[in-house]
Each structure stands twice: as structure tokens, then as C-alpha cells.
Image 1 (cartoon, one colour):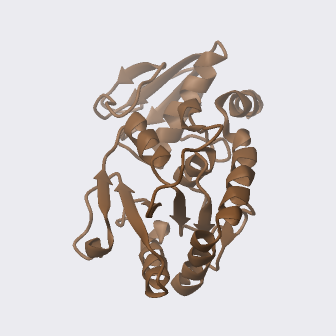
Image 2 (image 1 turned 45 degrees about the vertical axis):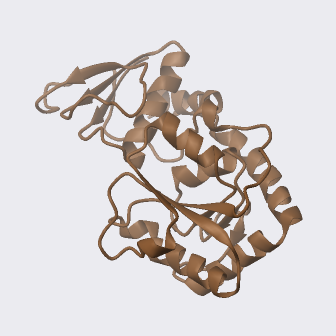
Length: 251
């Protein structure tokens, strides 16, 4: 196949991350893949695709043109997966991902869950990561580390340094899928997932209760870690690329 993805903004976003990962996976299967962009060169991850830098997309043609990466074909990079984890940190490091500027991330619920757990004497370090700088209304006093605009390799190292994740977003989140592949048990609100401790959306107290359960039970964390590893196999590049190839040729 000859495929061209259209990517207006190649900055660190879920859309850009998925497009680049899909392109790399298709290249690995022997296809010629290009990424056309009106933006600047990507510096936050490597790419095996051919890049076209254009003023607009009107003249971009190919056998298959992908205006945006199709949903349901998210890929977790191979480097993120771990067969086992190191000894847990003391205090435990709990990850909270996403930009506060994106309301769909429900970061207020993540912060609220952390505050609720701490009110009930749970000790942990809250580790924040975002593609953008924090907003002025983020409760940064509750955060022990704040990382901004990490490259793919830096993000992988950060995940491998953490022990659990709070995932308050309702929609599918690539960062949560990566956390599961990295062996991080999750307190989450995604309703369709059964591999973390789940709370209702927009309910920081219930999410905080799930976080307390997670932090209070080492055996539970180990069970969820193993379940997450098993589920995360579906997001390996080779597995997703085979399905994506079939979808592109039949669309």
C-alpha cells in the first residue's frame, strides 16, 4: 500500500502520537507511508515514515489518504512494555497524565481523588505529566514532580519510575494503555475497561476510594498489574498493524 497521513499539527497530542505509531507499524509491514504536515519537524519521537512539508493539503494525493488516524487502532510502543517491575518506591509514586487545558481529561477529578486519599492518611508522591505547562488554577502544592513536553523515550522512563496511575478520563486514553503495558495498576473512570479499579465519571470521592483500595493492598496491585499486562498485548504494533492494514484496504 501507498498511504499518506494528513497531520496539521505534529506537536505532542494523542492524535499525532497515534498517527506516527500507525505509520511506523505499516512501514514495518513493508508499506510506503508518508506523513504530510503543515507544521514543523517532529522532535519528540523518531519516525520511519517519509515526511512531506506542505502549505496546505489540497495537492496531497495518494493511493490511500488518511485525514486522521482511525480510532480503535491505538499502538503502544514496544519499549513501554515490561515483563516485570522493579521494587515499588517508598512512598509510592502515582502518575496523573494529561493537560489541564483539555476538559475531557477530567484532571480535577484526578486531583480530587489524590486529595481524598491523602485525607485518609495515604502517603504517596503525585507525579504529573502534561504536553503543556500547568494552568494557574492547578493545585501544584499537591504535586511532587511536574513534567512538561516529554519525548517518547523520556515518557517511557517516567512511567517505568512510577508504581500506579490515576486515570480520570472517560474516553480511551493512550497514556493509560501505556501505563498498563508498563505494569502500573490503575484507579480509573473508563466505563468499558475491567482491568483497573473503576469509579463513576465526575466523582472524585469514589475515584479516591478506589485509589485508597489500590494503595492499601499490595496483592491487589499485583493482580491488576498482571491483568493489565495481559490486556495490553492487544496494543502491540504488529497486532494492531494487521488489523489496520485490513481496515485501510476495505475502506
